[in-house]
Image (spheres, rainbow, N blue to C red):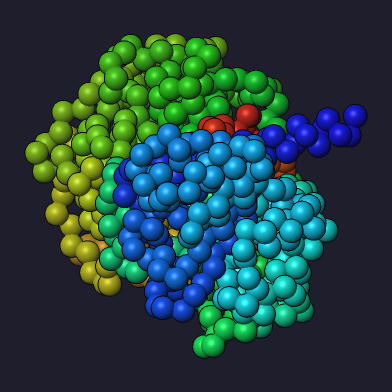
Length: 631
């Protein structure tokens, strides 16, 4: 019945605290956790901290160990079962029980008998937050006074409560405590129906808090919080703690969580977050000019080997696409993909897998590039196995002339022999490799990316393909800032560079043209209007003077990138949404089919931390005919 379902849900919610505690332990062990609100607790005035849904959080013990709880009492409230488990843990760990101190023979015993544990500066209370009368009675019995300034903390708690009950809890805190601060850390997921409701609810929350008497209120998502509220030296310290390469999932996670700070009756007023407004600057709406139809690609649905990310796909000849590398499904397991997949089209697209004749691990790589040199030859540049790898060099990818006609045939992979001056070009990933022409000669322009030693690169190399040596070609003009995970396209003998992730781990919105001159090349900025929304981990194509940017990651929690069309003559920049089921358009590959004016999107997704790995289930065709015709 409904009662048993409620109990089951309650137990599920209680379980989130345990998994959260495990994650926090890992973060603390690696040195990530810092607390910017500690300064609020300094001084001699009496204060109270009330942690709602505290779970197994160690806030009290950290503050007590740092000597920051003079004249301050910490109250923690959670389900009775959770409070009992935590009390037992405290009792069983000498270091914790020593910080709590002597409970006079009652404390921990009472935790099992009456669902609360009371000590001088620590009150662990077992009560359901949704039962407001019981909560108020328990807090009063534990000695909580509304005459003392109180800091309320709620960390991913309200989302598990019915809206009416969470609103009642916020209103009770506002009415009951004349001098109070409220810190709220919550999640919002805008890409599903429930998320849309959550987002609307939390957008209105700051207004609702003001109407309830919270005179100061500010809110920002965690991308903005990290950028604006964490000192630059602390950002750099965290970024260098360990090898890290899951930027997309980190930024997407941060766009789905926000922190809100509110206060009332505080002198001076308390505004620890952005004082300039209540709407995160990344959350503003992105102008949309229309939509792009999308459909599953017939013939390619259900092919496990195409469920991958961090791979590369290239059109080697008409109606034949080669996909290599990445992380995905192979032989029923998640792993770095060794097989080369060939997609060929006759009446419809079909896929076949070929195990390269070279079966060494050099063919297993992520975030590499593949450049077509002829119908039977392609060059693989860079890539990685793990973020600490030193680079994987270059590979020749050779196909039979009949490749794609009736099957994959034999695909050979050979480790390329590099000239010494070309080695630096190969030891990178998340870079771009683009075909260019200079004085009638063909070169590959290797640009940007990152390496095991440098988190972001600014250099470039002109690679002469036949002998894999680097040429010294002059380049003038203002040099673009360092970047990786950008896009690059050949255009009029030069290269178009768009977006990327910069040295400060911030998405970039710049577009540059490396333009061919008589004596060399020159960097030239392409101005767009309206300005291009900064993004990275997208793909790009050029068609009839228009630059098409597909997917990627940006810092706008209200939407995800679809297709952006930039007119390279006028600079006009228009965004189009993709009308499609949940689809992660990052770490994907895409191939433009000019005759059909379609984009074939293959793979995409990533490691979503504790939420699991997401792999886009099947290739998707985006129909661009209508939006290209309208330009």
